[in-house]
Length: 203
Image (cartoon, rainbow, N blue to C red; front, side, top):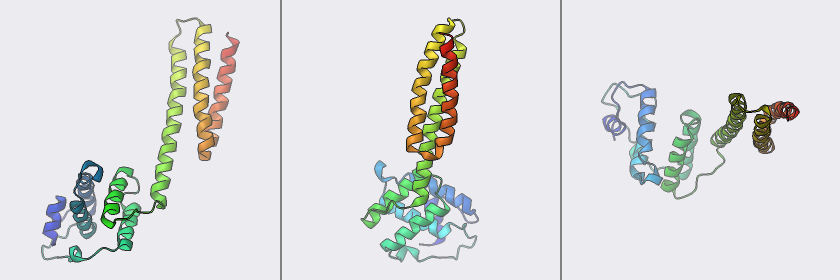
């Protein structure tokens, strides 16, 4: 397969930058997701094309590559996957999942889950989402308390205590399961405790 064929496959043209090739590949590979009935053979060709053009598309049309005729071994496939993790897709779990599933079907074996970049990023993302959910619940409780000023302070305080008690559970759960967020959670729990104590005075 020559450069022109790779360009046609990815939808790029001679002279396009490495960044343009990467963007084109990301869009094309999404269409091949196995869970959506994607074409595994086409996914393999897209990966091959990206490998050939990942440094940018040569302007010359006389550059050819024989990589299509190369038989990929299991080890080579894993090396390619790890290279994507490190250089291209380390911050995109969706793309990583597509590549992982394509390679699993292509090699007929499960790709090891020990890729620390992917696992660490996924864990950090999930933890951040949980913490942001707790933060949103905290601020919502405070906004509700400040918004309902027409209601008697006694009832507003009762609602605030109830809502903050539920928020406490979220922060405590994060502290237990994600020690790296323990300090942030402790600071917020201390603030919640003080707010609840002030609210109790008005009852």
